[in-house]
Length: 497
Ligand code: NAD
Image 1 (cartoon, rainbow, N blue to C red):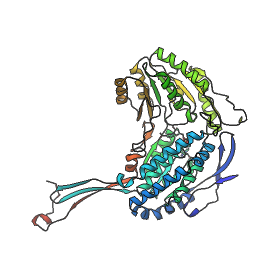
Image 2 (cartoon, rainbow, N blue to C red):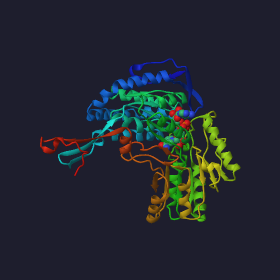
Image 3 (spheres, helix red, strand yellow):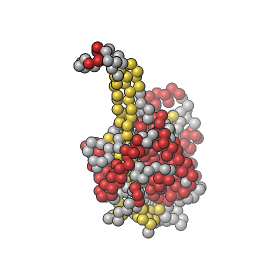
Image 4 (spheres, rainbow, N blue to C red):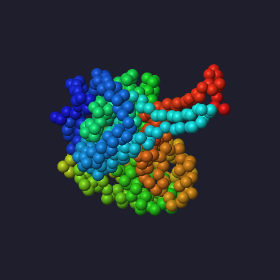
């Protein structure tokens, strides 16, 4: 059985006391075992990271940018093999895996411009002979804890800006798909980074707790489910760290009566069922406005679902693959049952889906609910599977209220031809990322990613300038160069007047 070890500076190795199975979701078979690390592993990683950090931070930013540039080239060169590795552990289809890598790559690309992004501000002549300037300095050692659903993109959201600004970084990826993070760390070394700048430790709650409590780690970035995000945020902050913690989601697609319905259905299909619904920016709730829109939308969705192809992750024809584990499959199917029990109409039932030759794979067929209401727990909670729920709204105001009042506020989309309605919606909705005729509005790498409400805890969003701010502290220098005149030695509280 293949063993997946931590990726530590100098290739240091620890005999694992515990391991976790890594499955191939398409076949349902265990394909590897990943080490679950403990305090000793983390202590070694932190010591390595601390040893190299001052040197890395002192390197001029253009040289760090060159490493980023080379890293980007290596990821591009290895795109196919990385995508296959990712698909084999996650279950998403290979093309989708390439998208996962590409979105992470774009953050690396942004970080290749780090000298510009790191520039401070300067005020000349803020007082007599006084100039004021700010600089951004690295925090020291940073850590990232990431979910299973984007094993390339999310580690790169965190690691690239953290490292580009001069920190060293320890990544604790999901134990369900740990190979791509290790491979990325290998490529980063190949790109010319000194050993210890990027290390990977594997593990579960034990390792997460060790990270949150470790005095040698200055900041933690987390992405995962909301209860754990809140826990990570509270515990990390209690131990004096800077913490950003992104959580779960339940994103709505508002469909106005004037929307281009064929285009909208196409977009919703990709956003609801793509990657088996295992995306924090998926659209698992469709909100048609008005009964007529609801009827037309429902009919078109049923027809589109009928044509949807589910297959193994290497099937080039498949639109989505299996979900990540048997446990997750069971959880999704339980939610479908809960929806039925709560009185929603199950229009298409994806339970019991089986693929010939892959009967042990973790497949869930596409499911569609209609007449879902806001009091149902299946509506309130995140399902994170290929399950689309239609919640009918009588008018625009009622549609706007749904995402606004929901406990999550990650993303939302409105489909309309009416500019005024779109503008009004974008202004008033209580959600962090809004798409107007765009189903999955994941911000480009030079903006920043972050939800509202229970979708994010802490300040500062991921990547872009918010990422730079999260991974640096600002130092402000007020300087005066006395000219030797009479006022130079006055012991007064300085004012700028
Ligand atoms: P998860 O919360 O189970 O795991 C995330 C990380 O936390 C993993 O590294 C895991 O090892 C660790 N972990 C698990 N249990 C823990 C515990 N009890 N204590 C401490 N650490 C623990 O999430 P997941 O299932 O891997 O990923 C799916 C979730 O992530 C969904 O809720 C999804 O919406 C969310 N997500 C959010 C975003 C976002 O940016 N808001 C992006 C992607 C995924």
